[in-house]
Amino acid sequence: MTTLFDAAGMAEDVPRPLADRLRPQNLAEVVGQDHLVGPDGALTRMLAAGAPGSLVLWGPPGTGKTTVARLLAGETDFAFEQLSAIFTGVQDLKKAFERARERRSVGQGTLLFIDEIHRFNRAQQDSLLPVMEDGTITLVGATTENPSFELNAALLSRAQVLVFRRLEAEAIETLIARAEAAEGRPLPLDTDARASLIQMADGDGRAALTLVEDVFRAARHDEPFDTAGLSEIVQRRAPVYDKSQDGHYNLISALHKSVRGSDPDAALYYLARMFVAGEEPLYIARRAVRMASEDIGLADPQALVIANAAKDAYDFLGSPEGELAIAEAVLYMATAPKSNAAYVAFGRATRAAKAHGSLPPPKTILNAPTSLMREEGYGAGYEYDHDSAEAFSGQNYFPDGMERESFYNPPERGFEREIRKRLDYWARLRRERAGE
Image (cartoon, rainbow, N blue to C red; front, side, top):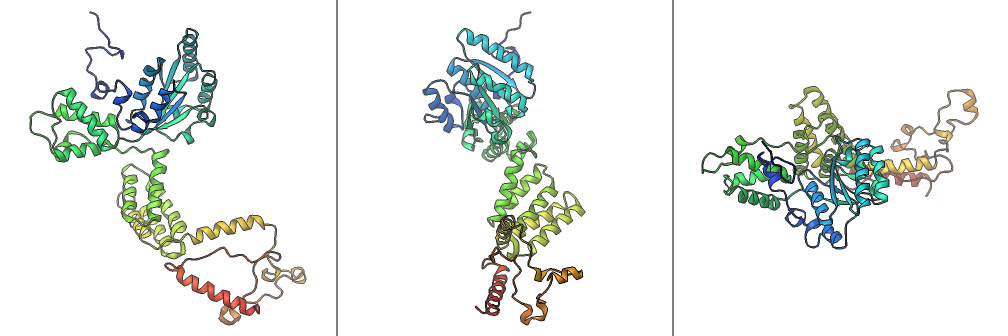
């Protein structure tokens, strides 16, 4: 018996997943990336000017990176060769380069597509440089991780980065409509369930079509499923999140900035997303302590106390009970008055310490535990502040030869309003006692 294969190398009698059957046949069919493949898109312009150079396609899963790479080969008449960084070693690369050289010798170019290129180590990435440089290959790499962190500067200097965006609801809806046309029937979901499925896809077109396929398989009658019925058919997808990569840093950054921006609802949303994705709660608690000291500071000194208490509470209770304590701390900090005065002051003082680090403190404020040190003037002239009026002597504490500097400038907000009053009062006393 002879088995026939299609152009993709798959046996014709083997069922193909819906996402594969609906793979775009030209760049115009790619959805959600108009900034790249639309009439005025960056990639469209490159192709109009001739074959594009090497590219790095960066974006979330299911946004069309592999599809666009395949279509590029057809647009340029290049031979398309695909490798996955997960399964490819240096020897595999060398063989691919040799095949590319053979094609080049007869006048054909090679588009070498490397999926998950961020998984290549430095040696593997470096091996690409000479064949990119001499035109043996046109490299198209796909990555879900930030190329700035994951790829060598030398490789990035030889390739242009194109950013793929997560698919919006409208783009997902277009994919669903194509699936309905391919199946010859409407998706058996009511309006709310359809919207819920789009949300479950989380901007991933391939995931959306997989969910659609699951629904079609489960449909046994013409009555549409509601949201509850949809939940029984498919399991909610886990959010795209890698605790060691971009998702991790993006969400903690969003949480921190929401707290800084006094938006408790957004802060709770990002906190919940991190918990749902499996982030280590003690990591979040440690970051909360940092938020309290960096963005609230002495505007509300209690914020640091509460952040530390939340850390201890989680340490004591564990998950999931202890997560509420962290949520409480995040809410407290998001609604607290904000000040970065302590953060800025410490930065200024650190720069001054580096600039004047060789200057010793004035001898008047140094202890003299030995007779020799007393003879050298250590402690001479020191005024014990508690013996002074207002418990304030006004003496100089900066090193001799260094002008007095002002690092801390508390704003007129929260508790720091009171600190501002004290500092202004002491500054006036200092001037009076200096005879100014």
